[in-house]
Length: 473
Image 1 (tube, rainbow, N blue to C red):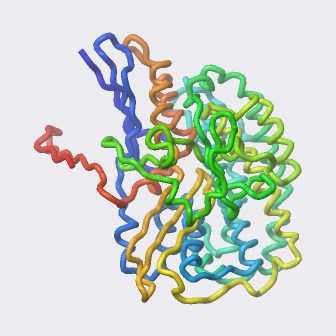
Image 2: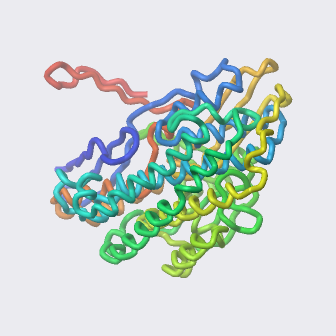
Image 3: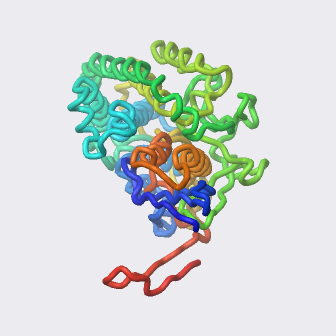
C-alpha cells in the first residue's frame, strides 16, 4: 500500500510551503516535491499604475527583501526613462543593497539554520530555534542578532525606515547622505567585523560533523548563474550575468537585463505556484541551474575586498571545481556577509559619497524596460511594458526562488531517499528534509506570481474537516 508523508508547513523559512514524500508499497521513497502553496498577484494588480510607482509597490511583496525589489524595479523604470543615475546615487544604492544582503543572510544563517547546525538536526524541536541557540551559545546568539541589526540600521540611516523604505526612486535616491549618518555607519564597523569573524570560525569548527548532510543536501552537478564584474569579481548591483556549467566552463556570458528574457524561460509544474526557471537554449528541465550565494562564489574569481578574498580562497579549496552540495550555501552566506561589511566601508570612503546630486529626471522615452540585481537569495529581474502615458500594461518578475525551484525539489527527493527507509522515519529525519529547503533560504512570498496560466487546486472542507468539493485547473 502506497503512503504519502506530508510536512506542512515547512518551518523556519519565509512564506508558506509544504513537502510531500511519496512511498511505494515496499516503503521506498519514489518521489518527493516541495509545494509553494501561496499565490501572489503583483504583476496583475500593478497594471494601470504609473511606472514610477512600481519600486514602492513591488517592495511590498516581501518584508524581508523589499530593498531587492526596490532596486530591480528602479532599474527597470530607468530603462524606460533612458537615464543614467548620478555616481553618488549608484554608490548609495550599493550600500543599501549590501546592507540588505548582510541582514538577510544573518537572518537565514543565525535565526533559521543555526539551530540545526549548532544544536543538531536531532535536537529537541521545542528548543531548536534562535532562543535555543542563544541559550546554548550566547556569543553566537548575540552575534547573529547584532549582524542583522547592523544591516537593518544601515538601511534605516539611508532610507529612514528599516522596512519598505521609499528612498529608492526612479532616477536615483530621494535624498543624499549626511556626514553624521556616514560617521554613524563607520562607527558600527568594528563590532560587525568581530561578529562575522566569530560566525565564520564557529561554522568551520562544526562543518565536518555534517558530512552525511553535505552528501545528500541537493548535492549534484548543475549550472550556476550570477552577476559578475569585468574583472571577474563578485557584483550585486550592476554588471552582467554569467552562466557556468558543473565544471566551471562558461555557457553564456554578458547577459544583460534587456537580454534576460531572450535566454531565460519559465516552466510550470502542477504541484507548485512557483515557476521553474531555466536557460532556454538547453530547454526544460535540462537548462535548470542554481543561483544565490553558492552560485555566486562558484562563478567569481575574487570578492574584491581583502578579508573576503581570503575567505573565498579557503572556500574554493574545498573542491577542485564548483561546490555541488547546497549545504555550502551556509558557508557562502557568511563569506558574502564579510564582503558586504568591507564593501560598505570602502564605499563610505568615496570622496563623492556626500554629494548632493543624487537624482536624474526624465519621462517616458521607451515603452519597455528591464532591471536586474543580485538579491540575497539570487538573481532578480523586473521587466515592464508601458503605454505612452507611462502606465504599466504588462509586468513580469523572475525571482531567485524560481531559479532554484527545480534544485530544491531534486534536493528534497535526494534527502528523503537517504533518511526515509522501509517506510520508517524519525522527526530528525524529516527535519533534515526540511533543512534542504532552508539551505536555499527561499522567499516564497516573492516567488509566486500571476504571469500566465497558473495551476490551481482548491479543496472545500466541511466544519468536520471532510472534503465537500474539489476544483482543479
